[in-house]
Amino acid sequence: MTEVLFRVADSYASINNRYPFLAVIWNPETRRLVARSDRATLTRSLVCCALIMGLFNLGPKFLQICYLLDRARQLGHFPSSREEAFAEPRHLISIALGIIGSGGSILASFFAVFLRMYVIPNSNAILAMNELLSAKGKKRYPLKVKKNQKRASWKFQDVVSLVRFAPYLMLCIAPAVSSYATYKGTDPLTFILYWIPDRILPRSGRILVKIFSFVNLTLACITSSQILLGAGIVLTFAVSPRFQLMMKESISFYDQIMIISNISAPAQATVSLVGVLGSAFATIMCNIISVKMYNVLPLNMYLLAPFWSIVLLIILNLVLKYGSQYELVSKEMLRRWRKDVRLVKMGGIGRVYARQVVARRPVRFFIGVWNLNLLPVDRSLLCDYDTFIAESTMAWLVAFDKHK
Image (cartoon, rainbow, N blue to C red; front, side, top):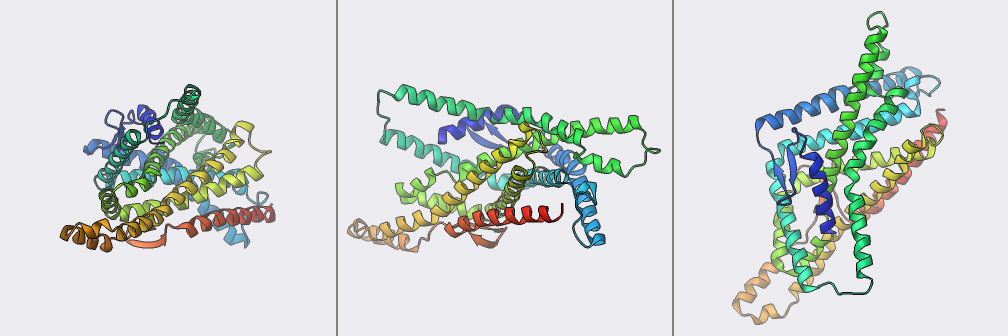
C-alpha cells in the first residue's frame, strides 16, 4: 500500500511540478513534500486562486445563489424550474460542483501557502516513519516464493499502472466538462451575460466571453482536480493503516506519533472539518445526479456522478475508520505496556520507564476549528456520517420532487 501511494504521488509530480504557482510540490527523488518559499511563487498561487478559481468561477456562482435566494424570498418558496430558468437541476448542480471544486481548491491552496512551514515538516516526518516501518516489515516478513507469484505480481503492477493514470484522466475530462457546461449555459460567466443587454455587448463580444469562459473553466477544472487529488494523497498517507502498526513496534514510535499529532492538531482539526463537510456535500450532489439526471446528461458525463459518489464514500469511510482506530490501538498498547512485568524487573530505570508509560494517554484526533474541538474521530462519527449522507440525499430528492 505504501509503495502504491508513493508511485501515485510520483505520477502526480510529473504534472503538478509544472505548475509555477503551487506552494507545495512533491519531490519524486527524495519522496518528500517541498514547500516553496520564494515570494514570486506564493504571489502567483494567491493570484491564481483569486482570479481563475475565485473571481471568474466561484464569484458568479455565489451571485447566482444570492439571486435564487432573493427569488425564493419574493415567491415565498424556492423557485421551480418553470418559474426560474436558473433553478433548473443542472444549474443547481453546477453551483454545487463549482463551490466544491473551486472553493475546496482555494482553501487547500491557502492552507498550503500560510501553513506550509507548519504542516510540511510534520508530513515529511510521517512519511519517513512510514518508509522506516515498511523497510522493517520487509526484513521481518520476507515474501515467500510461490508458484503463482509472477501472476500476482503482474496483477499488482497492472493496478499500480491504472492508478498512476488518474491525473492524466482528469486532464482529459476537464475540456469535456467545460465544453458541455459552456454549451448548456451552466458555466459561471453565462449568468453574468444574462444581465448584460445586447446593445451593450453585441453577439461578437458574447462569443469572445464564451470562449474565455471555456478556457477559464478548463483551467479551473484542471487546477482544482490536481490540487484536490494531491491533498487526498497527503490525507491518505496520514491515515495509512501502517501507522497503527507503529505503536505496536515500540514506545518510541508511539511517542513520535504523539509529538506529531499534538503539533499538527489545530491544522489537522480544521482541514478535517473542511474535508468532511466538502466531501459530504459532494457525495450528496453526486447521489442526486445519479438519481435525477440519467435522462439529461450524456452517458459519459452521467457515469462520473455514481463513480465519484462511490469513490468519495469509500475514501471517507476508510479515513474515518482508520482515524478512529488510533485511539483503540493506542489504548490496547498502553494497557499491555502497563502490565509488562519486564519493566518492573529492570530496577530503577524500569520503574521510571513504567511511570512514564502510566503518564501516557491514547492518541485521539478531533474535528473542529483550530483549537476548538467539535467532534472526536471515533466509531460513532463514521456511523453518523453515513446516516447523514443517506438522510440528506433523501431530503434533497423529496425537495426536488415538490418543486418540479
